[in-house]
Image (cartoon, rainbow, N blue to C red; front, side, top):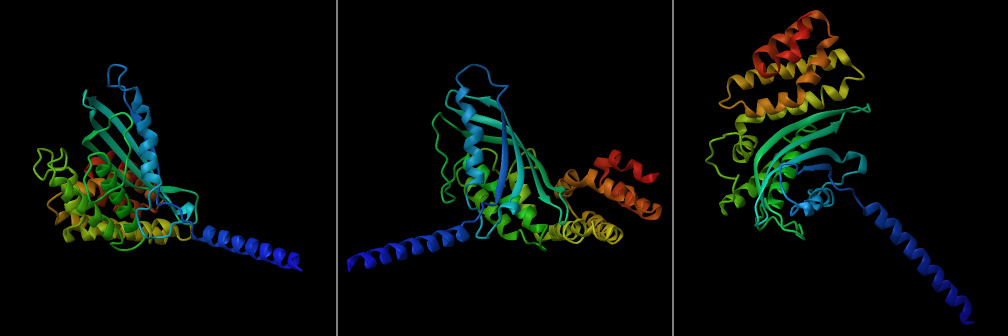
Length: 308
């Protein structure tokens, strides 16, 4: 008489575990970042720095395995980024100086293509990385290695979210600001308000969180979501939307006291914009060229063909 009851209990246990496994499967969510890291140590001399080969996988794991938001990301929605790090010097105390370039991409709707949303360099990173170092995420205590990664992770997220909704990245820019504020209480190198180079982390996040640059940030939404994402279905209408966006950027830049955020936009977009208008009607192409000639003189060579 006990045998059927035993098997019934076994079956119930199996069914419960199966349902629980399915539940867990649906609860699992992908992390937000999918970053590739490249570390160049060619400028360092000697064999004592061979362990720096661990830096690439350590940083990739730190960036890609942490949940940076409370948003559910699907695997195909993860933000593609490339972080190129050149170690320029190192000391016997394992203190390193590095130059870093960060490039971020997002998909263009209804296509297999991607567009660059951010291209930025930072030449003032100093961090400690002794052999065997463990990287722990803790935004309540500043660390010169993970603090830099936290800061730029939120900058990356802010730029990405701005392309999907107007000022959608504000929360993440504020989080980056909080990290910078904490860093400044430690007098860590590269985080100071006072610097001979005004294109630094403090200036970057101060501008991104300032209402003075909201027009530019809104342009990220209109350019990407209303322009690029509709291009495959309505190319002429998408061009007109992007042209309107460029006019708005031109107007906003004239009122601005700093060009850096505008340079960041065009560093990522110049070649793409030239391609968008290359096959446009001549009047549209020339209007785009005249706006770009006045607004983005740093990439004039990219736009020359629009005159033809």
